[in-house]
Length: 136
Image (tube, rainbow, N blue to C red; front, top):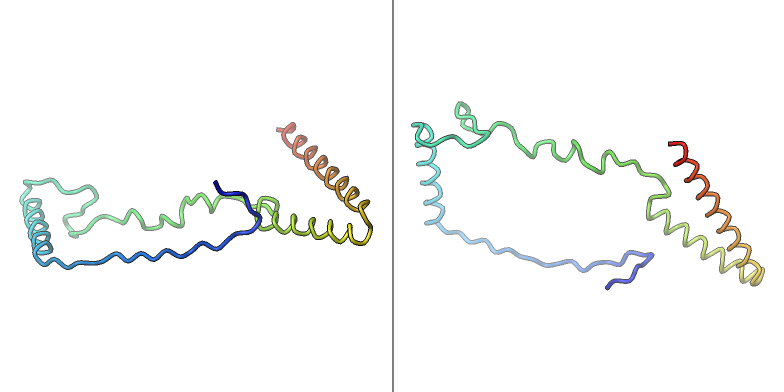
C-alpha cells in the first residue's frame, strides 16, 4: 500500500519494444480477401460495412476527427485555485515554514497562535460553504 505524499516522485521509464515481423504470405492473403470482399460488395452479394460510401470508395467521416476538442471532460471543468494540488502543496509548505520560523523566533507561543489562526480560517471557510448550500 502506498503512503500519501506531498511531493511527486519520479516514476521509472518503461522500456517496451514491440517487434515487427513481415510475413509476405499473410499480407498477400489479406490483400486477396479485401479484394474479393470488395468485389462481392460491388456485385451486391455482401452488404457494405456501416459508414462505407461505395461511390467514393471510402468511409464517411472519421469517428476520431474532432474527438479531442469536443466534449472532453477537462474542457468544461472549472478550476479554482483552492482545488489545484500545486497550490495546496505550496500552502502547506508555507505553513510549515511559518511554523518553524515562528517557533525559532517567538518560542512555543507561535505554534499556538498559528494553530488558533488555522482553526479560525477553517471555521470561516465552513461557514461560507454552509451559507452557499443554504441559499440553493
